[in-house]
Image 1: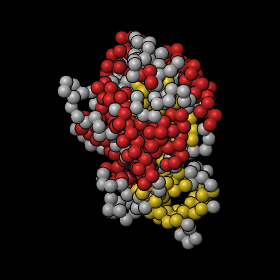
Image 2 (image 1 turned 90 degrees about the vertical axis):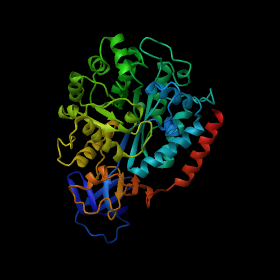
Image 3 (image 1 turned 45 degrees about the vertical axis):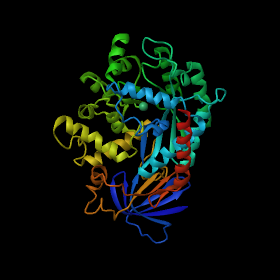
Image 4 (image 1 turned 120 degrees about the vertical axis):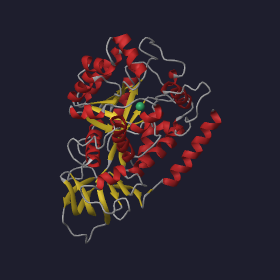
Length: 452
Ligand SMILES: [Zn+2]
């Protein structure tokens, strides 16, 4: 048994003072408020539950900052960025993927994420055509090494577009027949236990046929794992979907599948008013990635209308142009402020915007990762983020405004310690394996550079 003492802790009912947490293995066995610190193993400032990063392409961490140069044609957009991303995907072997993902996961933990849903479609090692599942093993190893809780989401990719049943030459490095993909899912599902669990996904409506999508959704339903898909990220995709399927992407998906709380729709940026109301009514999670969506020029999710209809959300760092959950939440709100020339938009349940954003991301992130308990409460996994309570960011704040400061102040984050499954991953604001992660990440990038 380990005991922690937190001067403040965010419990399901709100902030409590002088909270003693008793841990048994990787779980919280007991929570006692107004307790004494005597005899506790570690004393914390403000303890909050860790957030789930509900959408990650870990390998893209190697691309961050490398695509911010205007091309000679001067027409840079999502599709030109995708060319650069494919170039990288064609060079990342399992060894590099381990190092890149480990660095990304260490950064996630350092910034207050304790879990990640890895949306993974690079199922083939471009350096070893005979290898099977080594790219999955690279992700699992990176998660184990870093300590982050992983929901591995194997994602199917099989074609270049709605009217193009074959993958492009670049896509052949990760595209595969659906039978082979489902066999991969079955193998990895048997290996996932403890802090490693599994979901399933389809890349997008354009990259997966209707028949394959039906088979994948059926597996999700039969096994009870979360089902993820990119949808309506770009206007071009909406137009192509309408031309081929006679419906906009979200509308088509809702008409053809029993979309419910087990589904995570990533981006869902371009929806009309009917789609917004209909998606919100399903209980599905819209996984929003504001820093990536801004970086790629995707567009702005209709957040206010979606929340007014009772929609659920989660956040993800997606391409990892930024790894900071509080920045994602800040930009969720800022996008709406810029578009509407008003303030404090996401405050439908709680007048404090930071508190509401955090609560929504906590709930939606858990659903997207297929988890039940994410709060600091008895029976829940011991996934805890400890904030330094004498950090200037939090000075002068009370229980009502503390999360507003954390989301909106934007100073260096006051994250002091992070625990996942009862294990400390971050101490004194540094990941416990930082040096190894950095060294191997730098070496992997050097090898990738020599292959370009
Ligand atoms: Zn994505």
